[in-house]
Image 1: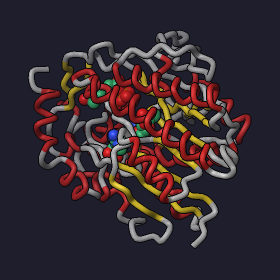
Image 2: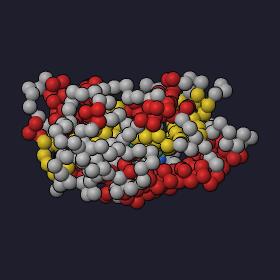
Image 3: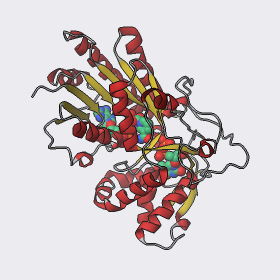
Image 4: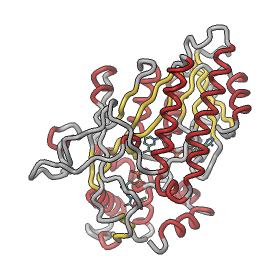
Length: 380
Ligand code: NAD
Ligand code: TYD
């Protein structure tokens, strides 16, 4: 079959990547979707069971750092669009092993860019109709202060876009123009890769795009990140390790809303531009944790307060960024994107998914995971 587009999605077996692959494979039967993933600890083909037999889906196990292999795959599948999500993505791991982050996030991105440059420049149309879309994070902007006006609380009941929630933690937000100021090895490696992507546009004229998104949550997230880790620990009556005083603030977006934004930007975004993606949904960690506890207990039929005593304050993360908050109004204004889910709904769906998919969780947490958990949390 002659496909209308041939899109390479890197990191498609990971958390966000699997949602993007699923969306594209189902929504665009006339596109061929080529998922490139090395299947590190974070990549799991079980995340894509429902699409693995679709005729327009191809999986290639490969390392993005392998330049020759990337060039070969681009040629083999006539790739004209790249949505690049493959990365090492966990801040705590980056603190213990920064080299892996530089290798995958910086050198891997560079290897993909260079392979795309060579391949696309060799095609009859050159860069016409091509796009290199790089998925990045709000963490590249650094951290914001807590400057909430007096008396405004972080409420669970307001809508995500209400002015009240908006100002719950401060009046400052990350804009597309905000200067990069990364603090962790993870965010430093992502910042570096963002710069390389823009450099390929400015130097070689490659059509590129970068988006910077806030913290995602939802099904299929590896249980090293706060939300799935805590849901799983509550279920197993294990302590909930809250870093520092639990006062750091994150801006949470349901993963399917991120995937929808990626679809929209891939098709309608302005080349060489940057869009911030976020839901105006800031939560202080400890407040979020209480919501998770309440939701898990309710869905498991436990009495209210049953799991509160699992909260355990532990040594803070080194260089722990205080607050992230995205201003995504440009994306709303220019392309009409808005988050579809209220947080209450999103968190309910998420907790329910993890509780209903215990087999997935058990598989993910067997083997290496226990060692990871001990290394990361014992003695903390
Ligand atoms: P993830 O860790 O769940 O998945 C990463 C995927 O990349 C895995 O499938 C892994 O096997 C694959 N991978 C890693 N190294 C590779 C390599 N060398 N070659 C090929 N594949 C490799 O990550 P995620 O949370 O889904 O994040 C995806 C992207 O989105 C990342 O670039 C991340 O920086 C960005 N992002 C994540 C969030 C978030 O909250 N999770 C927010 C904003 C941006
Ligand atoms: P995480 O999910 O690792 O995302 P990120 O660091 O990229 O924002 O962490 C979210 C917040 O939760 C962050 O402020 C660190 C905190 N946290 C804990 O308090 N305990 C934990 O065990 C983890 C994994 C995170």
